Amino acid sequence: MEVSTEEGYFHQYAKKFRRTVTPKEFEQFGGLVSDRERFAFVNELKWRVVNELPLEQSLDKGKCLVKALQHKENGDRLHREEDWNGALQCYNQCYLLLPEESTLEKAYLLDHRSQVLLQLGKLDQSLEDADRAIAYGYPAEQLATIWERKARIFQSKKDFKTAVECFDRTVHYLTHRSTLTPEQRDERVEELKKLTDTVYYQYKNVQKYLEPPKGTRPFQPHLDGSVLYDSTEAEGRFAKAKTNLRPNQMILKEKPHAATL
Image (cartoon, helix red, strand yellow):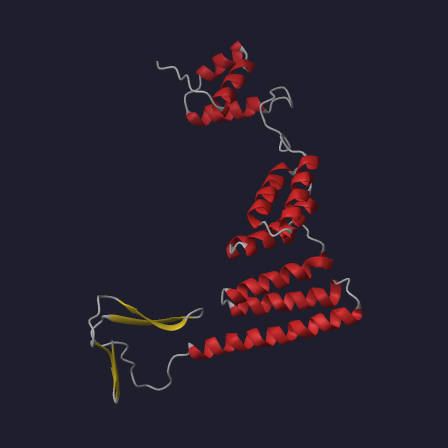
């Protein structure tokens, strides 16, 4: 029988587990006939007495709130200096060191990391961190800033419908949970409502543009299959070449009009 000499976490774990098993238990294990029985036996053995087999790793092993906050402080400084990559590295280190119960610290950290990811052009990751910050319990009186950031990201991605929904949430939190003075709050709400109307107008324009042509006359999208016409909500109508096109090749004909390359 070949004996493995590899090293690593799982090999050390297996050796530690083997040393904790008594000869009688090992003999019982040897008498099992199926993998299901073996799994049930080992699983039961691990939990027969709490802390008797010190094999399970603590969720907070290697965590340190003090060190995590030091990394966050360094990240905030680099953030102010617009060193986005340096700030991102510090925030990543901070996240790895934060204990499991430090949910509010995680919420603030993910909000800051979302801002940095946005500056680096990583829009989807920025949105993901914004959502996770909300899920970790980001303070409601400050949620308007996160929802506005999400709205502007969706607007830049030309997802106007979702952008409008996020702007509406921004206005909601500004109106009901903001700590701004009434004058500041009303001014911001008015600005956001105007912006929401603009984005909604963009959304309706795209929807109108994508409506199928009215009437029963069939639309002939191409002549010979070389060009495919399509449309999406984000890009509008567009054409794609399916084969290599030649100069002066007629690509669309609808009397009395025609288009050539």
